[in-house]
Length: 360
Image (cartoon, rainbow, N blue to C red):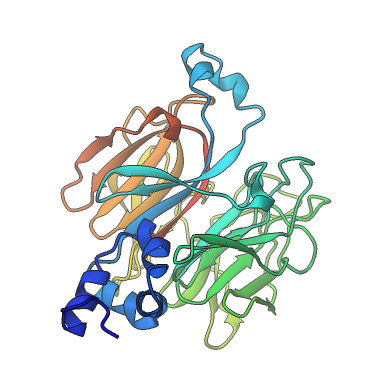
């Protein structure tokens, strides 16, 4: 059976790889041939190699009540926020919302973490929006079927403010955070998304609460955080886990050139240099080799940076001017250092807790 009547197979496949990601489920439901094509690994590979794969920034963002925004009650509404998944397409400048499954009808867990693996988005942990108790739950959204499924719970009991990163292909890594008694953790885990299996990893050398994980150069880098006794006094150090040898390297004591919350640390892309970016003290800085270099000043309108995303030669920064204020976004051209403000619809200006970049 022909994929598209009257067209050669290679031309038909060339048409299908141009389908926008939000139409995957609809296209896959047309016929068995299209379903097989959409779900094939070759489809994903062809989209990437032909540069038809779409880069999206997925964020955990609070819903906005337009009436409260107009009457100046946004800060008060922030006391009991409901979180959802907002998606930004940098190249098109478009925002949209991902539907949540029945188990997430009350909203996403507060302080949950997210990571992308292939065509799937993994939501891990956080505080239950009804009970506010720490959860070890895992939910997975499949962009091909536009459906949710429940994953195996994180082992070891609930943990909060942990680091989370993905190798983009199969595995999500979790490290650090704290337990229900607010004891900082050294433990780390690996989650095989396709097989729904958790595997314990060797402990880190140090406890790391509120640390940040970045997957770069084929290894898991866990940055900063603090031990139980230090409570909020962030370290400059980092530890790197070699996924091939399954061993942690020596602690890099001065990985950051200044002690700071590492939440804005992000991978700089697939380049051989393995660059890492972060926003710190009003500056955008980049790690090249072993040296941090200033790239640009963060726009003055943003005092609190909530999330950062890097793709190709651009960086997207979202933040606000203060607590309870609407969030806004700017794009930085990493080649010339020029900023451009992104106009976001009012419903996509709510508080952001975390984000991740996907290429689908």
